[in-house]
Image 1 (cartoon, each protein chain N blue to C red):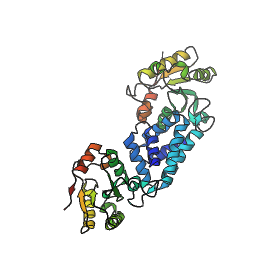
Image 2 (image 1 turned 180 degrees about the vertical axis):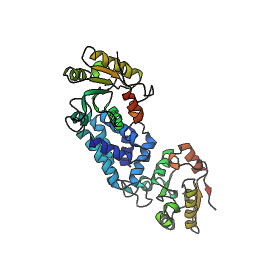
Image 3 (image 1 turned 135 degrees about the horizontal axis):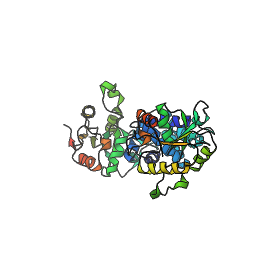
Image 4 (image 1 turned 45 degrees about the horizontal axis):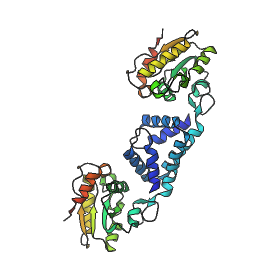
Length: 196
Length: 196
């Protein structure tokens, strides 16, 4: 039954899905109409073909510019800096943020070999130097590595004519922005404070 | 970002995967090499094309007969009756059962509209009437509906020259055979008792 084994093996590669979960999902799909597996296969197949990085902010997008960057009604002078594109989805779900974004692509983690050059900080500095940016909100996760990353971003922006702020500790320390509820994220953005 | 939304929607259809898990899996795949999504897509795409039901026992297979049914070294006179094909995988993992199987395709559940005609009992009776069957082990799940199904199977086999046995209550009552550990399943099979 290698078609089953193949799918179980591929599903087991995903985070939080162990071998038993992979088997349960596979047998579940075998009990559904074949169209369901086909639709899931098609969605996976086109995912990496269609998704690329926004030229300006590195958010995930299907166009040269992502939706917030291409939206003239949004405040392009307000940039929210996040670790990952998934964090943007979390912030967008609150429906309360009207600025744009910048995705660093990670956080400083020397033990994992992630240094300053691995993060998209230079392109953030270039955006600010390009003018028209009033404020940068650093919304890295409120953990040790996220705080270190926030300080590094602040340092790199020092001396430029821009306000640098940090989202408030409304988020539980040690938590993940990606999994926070909308109200908490919205409050954290509303109560942001200047980084001095 | 509809390619992302598409995949999140399809993943969310799966049991135990909510919207947040679907998003986390999607963003995880976007951080992996595209080949990983492609392999998972291919495995899903071929699953329902290649998998069919065994002509003899209704197990899932890629050939006319499933692996146990086609294996002359196995005891074809000993049939273990299970609710679902997934249960066979659980029993096979124990490595201790040397007979063959019969998949009912469910259990009696009047409230869900599953009656005797929805289960593959007639084909089981035909197998026994065809001769060469020494014993039928009824390994439906040790729950109310599984017990009712076991009694129904036993009734249908009454009068035929075959021993009908039930797996021992080594399985915790209320549990799922599919998720039991191998030792428990093996003990339950070893301690099976005749249904009188």
